[in-house]
Amino acid sequence: MRVAVIGLGHVGLVTSASLVALGHDVRGTDSDDERIALLHDGGMPFFEPGLAELVAEGTTGGRLEFTSDTASGVADAEVVFICVGTPSTGTGDANLVAVEQATRDFARNATGGTVVVEKSTVPAGTAERIRRTLRVVRPDLRDETFVACNPEFLREGRAVQDCLEPDRILVGADSPEAFEAMRRLYEPLLNKGCRLIETDIATAELAKHASNAFLALKISYSNALARLCERAGADVVSVAEVLGSDARIGRAFLDAGLGYGGYCFPKDIQAFERLAAKLGYQFPLLREVARINDEAVEAAADKVREGLWNLEGKRVALLGLAFKPDTDDIRFSPALALAERLLAGGARVVGYDPRAATNAKEALPQLEIAVDVYDAATDADCIVICTEWREFLGLDLHRLRDVMAHPFVVDGRNLLDPATMAEIGFAYHATGRPAAAPLP
Ligand code: UGA
Image 1 (cartoon, rainbow, N blue to C red):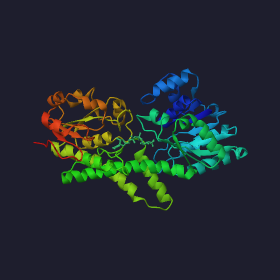
Image 2: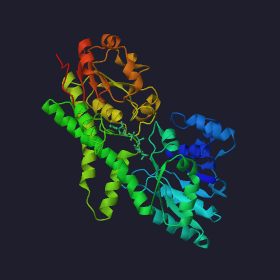
Image 3: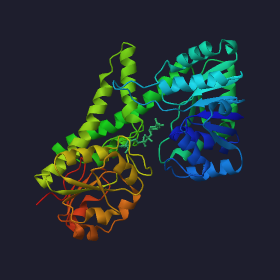
């Protein structure tokens, strides 16, 4: 099929390259000329495992093109995906200006027979707005343009895999034409047994927000349990194992730590709560999820303060700055939220991250950047593990202990083994676990 993708951020670029891998011809458009020039030069605007290779395959084979000219981008497309950003407004609502703009850009150049698909995470009711806009801009195409919602469930760091081997595909639509086009588009995945869930449009829109909010709720539930375990002398990791062994609960997304970050959960939870309020339903549970998430960062900061007495003049090393491993994305990263708190208390904060250091430095210039873990740890009074990068599992812990001014580790992701840390001589504070090696 001929597909156009408007917006080449994380979702748009991964979707473009994946649809080419499924056998379609894709034109990706973005209003950012620099991004298009970078892609033409074979560069990548962000790091995502496997994506550069997939994009290169598509462009070399001539089936994936990039342009900043939406008119030529959407020309002749059978399916147009809207993948533009939906950032938070000051009030927490989803800002839908880019969605409207993309709709208008498409409408002006539409030729008829196209299915417009919203893939960006949007509040329920947005598709209806898109439809109205299409009618206003192109009343002549009233019966020839169809709308669908096909939310994306990809995770950064595993986005290519999530796109090419999804758990399920969700399509919300209200016309046979839209359902048919989406079935054709995903036929290779459906033939491999991937489940297709077809719903009305509002249901698909709401289900996406509901999924992200529920995953965040699981994380915050575990973080609240961590606070409780710390007070009761219990171990939140074992509690999560017990919970997770119940098939009705499931083990995933029960890892307590510094909490969730990234460009999805924090803004989506706010936007979902705002949507509920606009619809006349108060949903304070969502506000509580966000509060517990903030508390998780504060709890880690408290452990550092508790261990160091005064922060003033102390050197604190943060291992991991990205909001999660396998990405260079630092948006709403708990590591940076912690860094800000420690800097505000007068600490010198030095960070190391295998991928996200440049982005972190740009976002928080007071942060010092180290070239590796040992460089970060040298003369440090405390280390905080903020992101569970795999390489942190293979550290030479004896060397780490020896380069530090004081061997004190706060494990914000429960990555290391408490007994080993105690044996080597660290003061070690995990999250929600009994202190195996308390401060002297
Ligand atoms: C999330 C969802 O998982 C995707 O399904 C969704 O498509 C995406 O948002 C989106 O809406 O675009 P993502 O933000 O890439 O994906 O990352 P996750 O793997 O969900 O992690 C989110 C945050 O939760 C990270 O900061 C991670 O460290 C944290 N987390 C995750 C925990 O603190 N504990 C856990 O047990 C799991």
